[in-house]
Length: 462
Image (cartoon, rainbow, N blue to C red; front, side):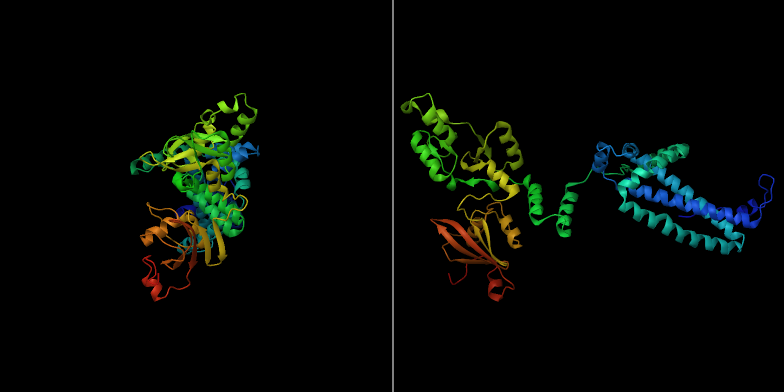
């Protein structure tokens, strides 16, 4: 905002001899133009300084300091007190703009009438400041934040020393006003927020900076600490375990047939898991151990394991398992009943994606652009992401099989169909009472029959 001294005062000032010499009008005009030009440059300097200093992220500045970038330490010193830095820039910028407006008014007053000079100075200086003192410098500072922040750090520090009394005064007054209004006076937020990082990931994928696989992995990382054990565990029905009184040879055979290197060992029932055994220990102690084969018992080789609630966060469990050097944990419900098991691999798959073994089917197989074939234990969130749909997730179910049972309200058979919210779900495979696979097809435009059936009940033809 431009301010000017009274026109009569300014014009009278030019009638006073300077150092005993009469200064003619052309000399005054030349000096005034030079002064205005310099002040425009200073206005651009202060405006660009504000953008460069406050747009430079703290983590990037710390990286510049660690890399030994010349001038980065001074930038950090200035930004350590952002309130003082802002006051320095604003005081300098306002002094420059007020001086520029006053000089321009005086110059124009030499050639035009009082009112005309004020009007021309107001609109002319405003246009010049907006273009050369604001728009252009700030645009440059946005594009060259790091280099410009380093370059203007010394002049800003010099300005702080030069205007020290004014800066201290206005710094104090501003803080007092903030205290009266209840404002915290916080100018910069610490680092970047979680939401900002996620937005950067989305933008990076849209702009082609991140590959699709990189985007998916980063997204899984952010989703990781909101995932609970129940979502990643192997359910009880799929657990391969052996009783504690099983002999060594039979236990080795069970490991080989199941394809698992580690299996739980229970006493009495699966609700009383004693620990886990590793096939490596079984083979080593059976063939190379000091104990006689007939004296070797499975209980001697059991390794302890963790028992964790199904509601435990996966990231917390991962830290505990790493600390205790365990690769498997037993998942229990609120009644202490074994619900499933979770391994290191299960949790790592939440970040890197499914790790398939030879002959193992994909959890989600794309049949065409609108159809996927999924295993029954696949999480609904993964299905929604793969097909870009919005099937609901409830507390009572988290998998596609649980969703089908919930909507049907009974056991289902192979070939049955359910239509929900523009998605036709066909049960492809059932073993005993368990849904093994289902096919999901996203309908282009639900017809009347499908809309009527969108409550999720099976078709009448079934």
